Structures are given as C-alpha cells and as structure tokens.
Amino acid sequence: MITTMLVDIDHLLATPIFEAGRCSINFHPLHSMYAIGIYFVMLLIPNKYVRVVAVGLIFHMVTDFQDCIWMGKTILQILAL
Ligand SMILES: [Zn+2]
Image (cartoon, rainbow, N blue to C red; front, side, top):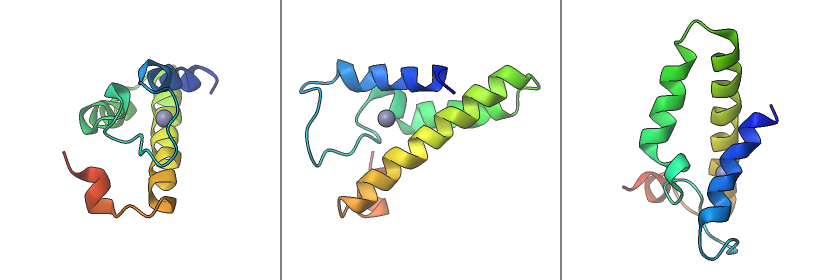
C-alpha cells in the first residue's frame, strides 16, 4: 500500500504544491481519466502485485474524488475534461 502513496508525488509536481479547494482529479497527470482507466485495466492483469497496486491507486482516486465532493463540486464538474 505504501507504493500507491507514490502517486502523491504527482501532487508535488503541481504548482502551487497545495491549494485549498483544488480538486486533484483531472488536475494531476496521474489523476486523469486516462490514468484511472489504466488502473482499472491493471485489475485485469492476473498478477497479485499488479492488482494490489491497482486497488491502492483506485482507492487513492476515490479518496481524492471524495475530497472534491466535500468541496462542493458536482460529479459533472469533476469529470469535465
Ligand atoms: Zn491524489
């Protein structure tokens, strides 16, 4: 599970590093809809370690997504590409 925290390196690449009220989903490259699609494809790979990482990454996206919801954003605003 620790390796999945590496996806947060993505957050550090952003400028500013932290901004209150910013939605991570679709903002960072590893939080794009394309990246999330890749994480779901990873679930299909019959390798235990790949799947564990994929589940961790998806879980990370779910928590970031929830942050966006709590900020008052609608699902359509979050998913807007
Ligand atoms: Zn994140």
